[in-house]
Length: 137
Figure 1 (cartoon, rainbow, N blue to C red):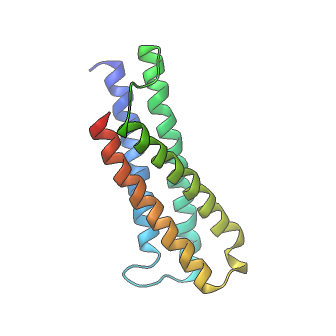
Figure 2: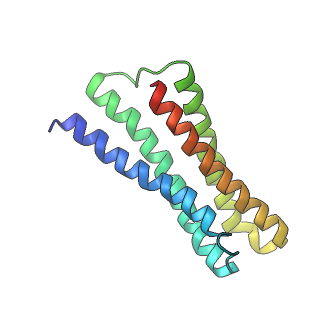
């Protein structure tokens, strides 16, 4: 096994667990039933960590490519658009999760649930964009 393949595989493992976390934790907040405020807070921390793992592992994909090839990954067109969508979702997810943790005690219940729905949407959109990035890269 080459060091390059091992590095990419390890980054991919982290990225996959981050993706599972951002989608799963967001959906767990309201499905199969709405969770209590305490459970939402724990899920919020899990989501924040998941989005941080997504962002960090995304950067590490580029770092591995730079290390082994001396240049960032060679992507164009649809793959670049998908990457931009994923980055946007990661930034929005991080900000939304951090806002939920910091300010949700002052929000109405409806506002809190809008945030959870947005977090679920960011996760699903990022996961969908990942398929396009993978296919067109």
